Image (cartoon, rainbow, N blue to C red):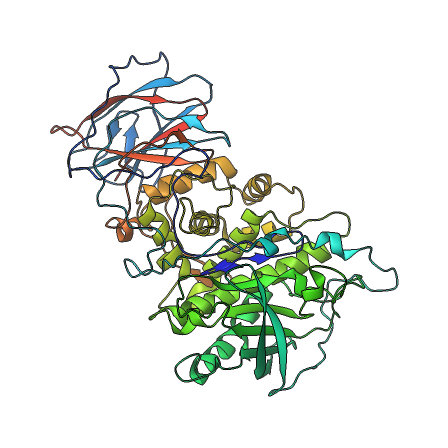
Length: 572
């Protein structure tokens, strides 16, 4: 599901919202918001001079092409220089840093928490922020979409599909292949739909079936529009035709590419509580919250409740639409200038992923246990889908490059704990931006096959352990090191095409998909550097600082590094 983009709920996964906004603390470990200071002025430090810890020293953190770190104390004058110190102990280590050859270069220091527990940050001088922080949820900013959207509704978060499944019937097939669909609806027919509005209320919307086509795999796909919303000054016929064609029209459509990559959204199963295996797929366009304000509410959602047959006596299942369906907000399409259609086309790929995960992980893979993802991984995989198919949806707009990653950099949401899901875009650490940015690093370095394997991996239920296993299976260093390299690559503004192996966010071409480069230079003017310290460096969080070398091109400082924390020194 997504909040301005809302998230989705898969089987065993509570609905999460997907949207625009930002972050910068996880809401429990302090606020990473800053104060505006005079440009070029350092915030004075009250701490006395430090004494270096015996044996504590930087090591070179890169090698090969594009690595500019010649030695622990010397930069080559070009390329990306990376040095690191990992404090594996519990006590703070004071690390002496002395690097020469830095004439004309800015130094970025990045602290990365290697554990899930917060640590106390050292109080060091901070250079002034480049600019004042933009308000969260402020709408379009820097040509990006930053809509303010509420957190995922309580109803969706609390629904647990696994408890409603019951025991599979031995007389019904449990194979995961898709049976041939049966046409059950006709263009021009109307029916009521239960839709969740911005106040967590289920409301009725009457919609008419406006378009119907058969996808390349034989599945019938229906496009319903709420009555009164199909109009020239609202969702026009031309807009609707674009959604229909891009979603289901041919082998290069969103539906064909996503299902070809990660599997069918519905098929044979053994549960009498669920809809027929031959169910058609319904895309329902409705005005979730008719207030003429596309910045409040959801952009779209999938809810596994609707995959169940109605049960009149159940407080939730009585509201099932008895439909393999997801829901797209119409106001987000026609009231958002320029980006509404493009954003909602990407939402289709996002919600389709949730629908597929609900079936493939919640039904096909859950015969022995519930293998539904935790919310953070459920949403991350949907964001990865948007990333992978984004250039095929619209070559001129890519939701991760132009929205998620950009907002994350603009809001300076670096001291955030990735596994802790925060779905409110008006608060720090808006998780859709954090997860979309981390996912972008992962798929660019480990690829589409890594992503596919992650979706089918049932080794662990915990999200961090699942990611760690999938990264190692793809030949990577595991979750913790991947998270640090993501921070270095992103916050360090590394070049996409000229970074050392394991770093940067380069373009990737694989399996017929093109993931666009995320080049640090494109975000240098919008990144929000911190101007004040948070209380703690949150679990798995990052905190950057910048330094200017002396006139002779030397940077020297003794840097305290808390226990279980990595310090990376970045020069380019």
